[in-house]
Length: 275
Image (tube, rainbow, N blue to C red):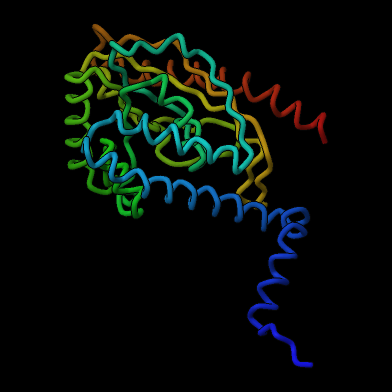
């Protein structure tokens, strides 16, 4: 009696049955599957929310709405977030927010924080603006997209964004390292965020993500894990000039490195004990 199943159907069934085995045994498969599910979930959620954010174009509060739904991607990939220092956020005060940048997963931590931050937008690389519904939704939500290769234009956009921050009492989130780095340290800072804060005389708000000990891009490892996000007390810039730029940058980075090391230490120790 001839089989009623076609070869493609049999292949698909076999592939589905091997998925649990691959997920359990292969770090590489687990790594790519988690990122795939993360990106697909956020993309679908952004697509569904587009009609909502279209009602309020370029309004940063759209990010609060998006975060309420996109934050569930953390459960899909197995990341737990602990927020510390939330008492330092003042919704009536504008800030230049700076944080370390380890992975595209950082946005999931920011989704956890947006309901508390309220009016906060982000400086992002221009190519993200063309990432389908995510990029369009991000633009509608007031993100500032800059092309780092066009320095003069990038500076102009940053200045304009800072003017809006002051006028609307919002926050502008900047990653001063300039690129993702997940090697257990915080890289030297570029000076753009500090120029803006000094020129506008608004405080710097440091935010520290603990080490992503569960993620390794070289070995393609992505295990469940926990991240502590610590908001430090704002650093006032009132009365500072550009002569104080280096000192301000160094002070902020030193504070962040200390908190990064302290918050990461216990998490890494817990991982070793679990192993």
